[in-house]
Image 1 (tube, rainbow, N blue to C red):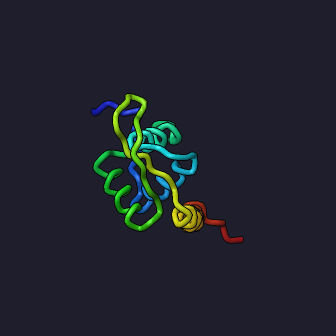
Image 2 (image 1 turned 135 degrees about the vertical axis):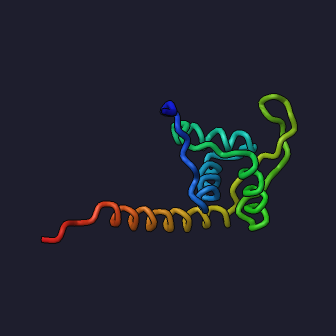
Length: 117
């Protein structure tokens, strides 16, 4: 019988990565690795954002005008892109939060139906 993995990582639901990145950038400018690390820490290590998902998402969000970047030096003195929210990104985050809350409410109703009297 396989051993149970107590540190099981949760898979991101499709469409949630953009919202998580936007939320993470509300603290200020961060480079890619710091964004991924912040999401992982904020989730209690349950969510891991892989580079293969993170960087395409950052590029897509930049094309949509939700984030912008500037070059700077990382903590290890390496050149890095620092991403920050734009006003369009803040509006998108608000829309994403509303959509997420509706989704959670709908799932909650399905999973916890009110017994009929």
